Image 1: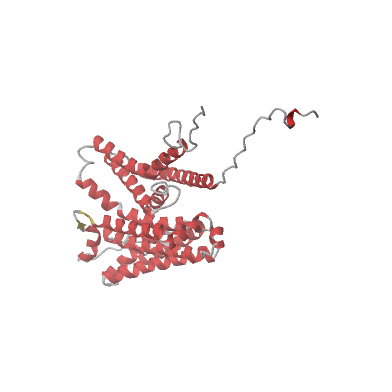
Image 2: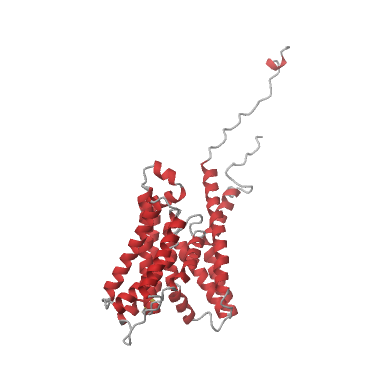
Length: 369
């Protein structure tokens, strides 16, 4: 009787290759681990703080207060896709919101025109950042740190080191409503985040532009060899980031209703924590819009719960700093794991070794030497 031979594609019980099932399980954990962590944090804080955390006021507060950090995190994510960093986004946010207040209060501009000019100005700042990095051949970390310092100087020059305070009549109600209004019972800023994340997901995941940006971020040399204009598309990424920063500045002005020249710096670290931590979720190993939103949700729920438990003020920077280190480490691990998975999948299989049959009697093996 011929012994049965198990299929090489089945596991010990014929249920599929164990390595593939383990890899699939690891992928699910990596992709949706932050989503599960968000749900877990909500449950823990709801049980710990049953009177304050699981309420409509808390949900509205999270959706409203975390909208600007989420928008800025999405802005920071775009250059990261190409392997660059834009450290000027915090300074740009401060300048943008101060300019909106200056044009409306001091310049007496119509608020729609002021907002439009500031958003376009943000795109111009992003364009200049991209040109300096790509055509000036300056490292993005150094270049944007320098331009950010210059933006901060312009902010101080416009405000003369003080604050821009509206007059007794205040700001136009239609302008403040772009932040204070609700839609379908939820704060309107939450819908801005959802719409922006959907647009970025469509561009990065479904359009050729997004694929070009990912190729540039993973291997610029290979992108050049296949004909992708790496400099041009990198400038596009910085410009889009600046455009979103300008929009975030408009939202910040409508929220604060006062021009504070230093407020933008408070958003720099949360933005990069969200962008880097987001690269470990949904699409582990690469920055993505949906992962960034999930990361911001984790941070928002964690900070809200910690705050309601009466934590001291210094726990916030400690939380962000520790999370940033964790995010960078997890992002690097996810990227290395993705590369090793691709390499093992694309590696050529070893040729099969032909079976050796024992020599027959009377054959050459029995012949005398």
